[in-house]
Image 1 (cartoon, rainbow, N blue to C red):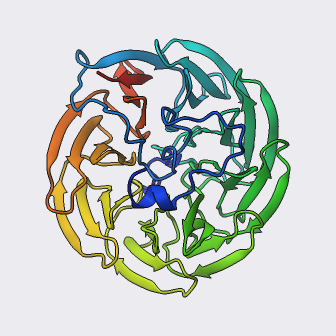
Image 2: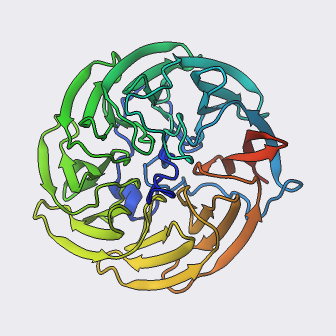
Image 3: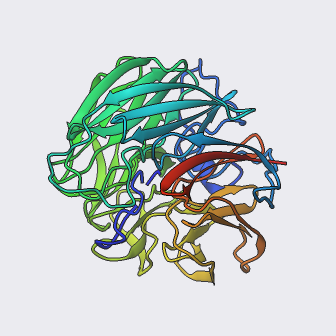
Length: 432
């Protein structure tokens, strides 16, 4: 979410914050043979290939409202910006209930929306030694659950540390690992990534951060890479680019490439801002760094280890992650402007003001892009470099920070609304 940022007032707004170029080059991810994942699943942050692109064998609706194409709506306890994870007949969400002082994983029936179980991952531990309150838009459940089809993996900040936990599909906590100290600056929203038998996690912060790999079966730390004492919010992603798998992390003023199996530094350059939120993508040649503090930037970095910054544009695409298709980047600026750029040159192909502020990341199915602003309005437009082509605009909910999941032809959307003096979250399933 999941993830958000920038100035003192808008900063880390939401740290929880397959047929095209990225699906061929992104981590898919590398899973063991026993994995039960299918094209009908959405197994974690940014979907099956960790790039925001859904399987093309589905046709989600272009129109919906409270009275049209809503298959079900169910209340969600607590507060969180983690996106829905869809596996088989279930949908999973992380949440934090401040009244009960618990951090939870919730499981819902995919057909009806009925909540089937909740699992308490952490009791108490909501205070942080930083002495600083998180950004008002952040939550204590802004990461998105990752699944390999057998277990669920989730990151939470608790008791001034970052923990990664594994749960079985009945909600039982199988293992829990304290990865690193964590001092809150704006919040936390980095989501776990799966690679072979590893869970890859990041926890950059002012206490001295780390990128780490944990054994999927035991939670043991396999390797750990120290990071600068700086706040940052990006999730790790493994991209197959320049002929090899590279674990890419942006932020802390760096663009870093590691060997995902060993933690060995493949290359690292000063080419990012201090605070980044987005999860990078690749066009097969470049990786893309974007940030918003202390400066706005979107840059293309050659992924061959040369250290070349191919282009760098003054664009504030700070929180919503980018989409890549056929040599073009599709993005929504935090301030609500959709754009298409040539990935090789950075040339702007077109731009269009949508309206509102954006925290959630756009997602794509076929050549359709779904982008939802903070007010719950979803803009659907064509992924074409020729011009902006609107395919629909729909409103549901009053507040949206979590990114949409697309699975089985349905959209799964986490929203919130004011009901009297109470803020109530809901999970929607939207379909034909």
